Image (cartoon, rainbow, N blue to C red; front, top):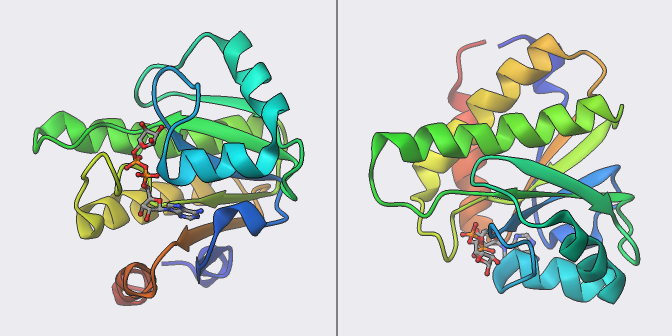
Length: 175
Ligand code: AR6
């Protein structure tokens, strides 16, 4: 992998609601009306104005993404994407990759330079982390290669163990 691409990817452990980036990505559900996990944390931190804007969006199909303001979050925007519920079918991988492409494309369309992802589908939706990590990183590298304007993509993992899975995968990619 090109070193300049590697330098634009950052892997962290922590809470995505604390990141002051152009946009954080929310692992939402297709109704876009909040929920548990990272979705609940983002809505709590952003305040009720976020839910009001989400209501007006009228939902989002799996694999697509929608953007709102960040309200009380340090991030300027929230990109809501809907991951697949893992069932072990080939289309799960395609839908998960679509989440990353849709979110990155929306950020690029709005000329956002920094974007942070949680591990979409890896909580309640049951996607195995190691498989999801490969999809997240491979898809992002392809996108960054084609889009020099996107300066930084952060993968922020809630647990230290999950962070190590991402770091090992990125470090193991051929240079
Ligand atoms: N910051 C970063 N990562 C987090 C945070 C946080 N504050 N909180 C949880 N995670 P999940 P899903 C991690 O379940 O699997 C919701 O109810 C968590 O450890 O939030 O896509 C929605 O409304 C896990 O690795 O999302 C949907 O109904 C990852 O975020 C459904 O859950 C994703 O876990 C979506 O399920």
